[in-house]
Length: 330
Image (cartoon, rainbow, N blue to C red; front, side, top):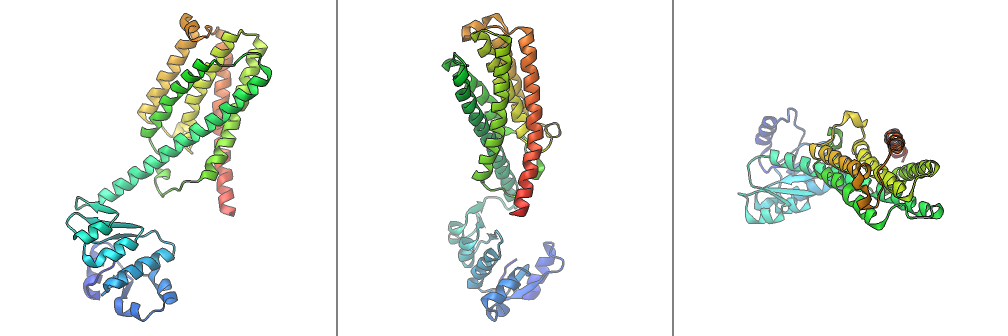
């Protein structure tokens, strides 16, 4: 708390807002401190009283230098420089124009819970954005290697161009539903930062697992001696169902059964999987360039998909444990 009021008023107000044992520093004491000493004191102080306007900015800058992320709430002309210096300047709709112009956020209601709700919504949005990035990058990375590898030993295209477009269109629905997904509480407890290196590692690990199971699917279908149309139908179904299931696995750091997905994500997954099954298992499969899948192929594909989802779940726990150890030692 930073105020121009005298120390006795400041101490009384501090106790009213929940600071039971306020540690106080006054403006006259600040004037006598050199920068090094002030930097040490500012991190131990939670009430600044009898503060002059120019000292507010000095306090904010010292807190930032000490490593804090600083938010400052003020509504007067004397608060303008401090609002500008803070990481997040907050003012109110009834404040003077200078303060509102210097602030990053202007509260239209006299309620600080608006900030808490906004922070939570922002963290939910960021967490769901990362889920989409993890899913899209790893899936595209895996598909790239699968298609390139298949072209080396298959005498035909594993999927026709229109089938690839249909696959991408159908997998987009669960990925779009991630925007409204439930976010685990531990991901909302603290702010997170954009980490390109982490995303790259995630993409390589889980994209590689996806490619490995694609090649297992290729081997199974070649061993069964299926036709080109049946091969495409089986790989289409395997790719689509595995993409839907793996979204449920990688969307959380917990075991997937301990974190329920949002309703839209669950519904879109169910609709897409049902659509893929109808498209590849019924007589009209030929309209999309497929052949209806017989039960023995369906059983093999189901086994591969379940094994893939289980492998990703195990790999996820190992990956995050390795990441935690790496960060602890760096």
